[in-house]
Image (cartoon, rainbow, N blue to C red):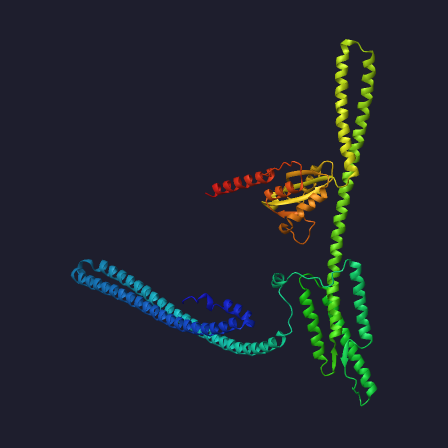
Amino acid sequence: MHSIRWYYSTWFIVSLFAFWFLIIPLLIGLILVKKQKEIINSFYAEWKINKSAEFEDYKEQLIKEFNDKRDDLLSKEEKLLDSINHFKFEQENERKLFYFEREKERESIKEEYRKQKNKLQEEITFEKRRIITLGLLYQLKIVTLQKEIKAKEEQNSFLDKKIKRKHKQLKRLKRFYEQIKQKVLVLNDEILYQSFGLYDLRYDLETSEEYKEMLYKVRQTQKDAVKYDQATDYSVTWRLDDNLRKGEAMNRRNIKMTIRSFNNECDAIIHKVKFNNVEVAEKKIRTAREQLNKLNEYNSIVITDYYLDLKLEELYLVYEYALKVQEEKEEQKRLKELLREERKAQEELNQRLKIIQKDEQHFLNALRNYQRQLENVKEGYRYNLEKEIAKLQGQLRELQEEKEQLDYRLHHAKAGYVYIISNIGSFGENIFKIGMTRRLEPLDRVKELGDASVPFTFDIHAMIFSKDAPQLERSLHNAFQDKRVNKVNNRKEFFNVKLEEIKQVVYKNHNDVVEFIKVAEAREYRETCMIEKDEKAGSLMSSQ
């Protein structure tokens, strides 16, 4: 029997039926089922013919074997008869001389003949029985196959009936699909994220408290609209049991139910509003209103445009309020970080100033001691003392200069360092972080940025001391505003820019000579790349 092609297999046809709602797979499945049935019927017919022919061939083979054995036995019998005749002839010739011996030999030959004949007869009987048994077995197999074919035919008829039922079910589902198609507003997240645009603020208030206050007013206006019958338009001529008062009571209950349903729908939608579904949320609110108006068509109750606008106003106020709260949290986080950095800088400056004052006092004490010794020292030791005094005076001058710088930085909060750093292993080429620190040791701030949150440490390209570091940082940020990596959160101070462009802006806004390191060392990253290269080469050699 030939094998059925894969697209006629049952699993493939069932998988097509699983996508019945796409119609085309269903039609293809029906065609394949019909074709499968034809192929199976042809296969069964061919198999039946082949098995019948095979049985006939086997029967002819058995008959041929039986005839061959019979001929062989007949030839043996002829030979035995010839030998008997020969012995008879010899017996006649030598009967007188060897009568007794020949008689015995003849009897033995007859006995052997009987044995051989009986043995052959038994073999023939056994072969006849075996042929009959095989015939019965093949007849039983044929009956079984006929039953299987009949069962398959019944199964195919059952499948035909099932396909007809599926056709009817498909028609019903098509009608149901056409009915609900207009009501579906659920969008695929993938399409939604690709299609949403930038949101333009409708109110753009200064603080979250203003949004909160305005949101309270809008909700209060909604309550007033419900209270003064501005939320719905309705008919006042309803009668129940020919009673106008009962009709009015029933109408008020229907209005209350309608407003409550609309409010619940809107609350659920507004509660889930996010940056990527504001427009969809508005469509859902409008659709909810249309559906409720349609359901209350015979009750003559309609949710007004005024009340709908109030709900939409609440939707956008809630969304913008959440944005403003997040923005204020980000700003507070930024201010806290600045205060923390400022506090660290002040602590370092004060600590260093105390050390300088302590060292200055030690040097002054030592200088006064040397000067007293200089008054009474002999001429031979004066030179060494004067040399030590000059050395202490030089150290005091250096301490005084550092003290003046620290005093200046303590009393001028804008003095600090602007750093330009990169991290090739983490962010790639031409991505630079431009930030500011007032720390006494600006390298400590760079080390903090290269902690466990990034896989590799930062490399310094420039460390610029400025009397007005915030202004220099701001000028650099403004110059590369369009090249920010994160264009939403300005706290992320990463820019996709070349180092030469940064140098030009620095030289333009900073008069001092600044040294730039063009090529980042990126030691850990480059060593990691070499290790990966060696591992790939080793795996390639082992595979070969």
